[in-house]
Amino acid sequence: MILNTAGVCFAFVIVGDVAHSHLNREPMPHRVFVDSLGRTWEVWPVPAQSGGGSSKRLTSSWLVFETRGEKRRLSSFPTNWTTLTDAELEQLCRQAREAPVSRRLIE
Image 1 (tube, helix red, strand yellow):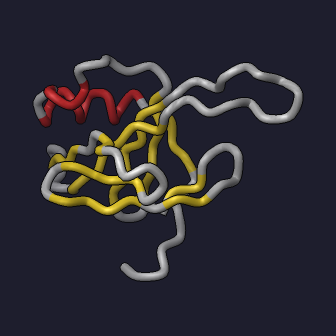
Image 2: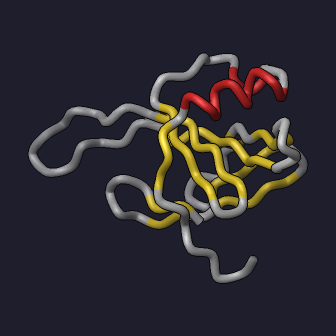
């Protein structure tokens, strides 16, 4: 489950290497990689959202990196991130800023 910037919760299901949103059922890019320390990371994009209120501006999209006990966000990322090697994804992960870790009901 992901909480977006508008405070709306939505969930997605991973089928093979593709995540599907329960809101629109469209495939969502998703990657899993193992870093040089042996940690398994999940990576997915969060699309730009409407700013809300009277403002019609869009907030920028970002890439989320999450492993057990750690979460990071990268606001500027290459469009071909799904085809990068694990080492290249790890480099992007190191550039990403730490973010609050989501609490999960089931671990």
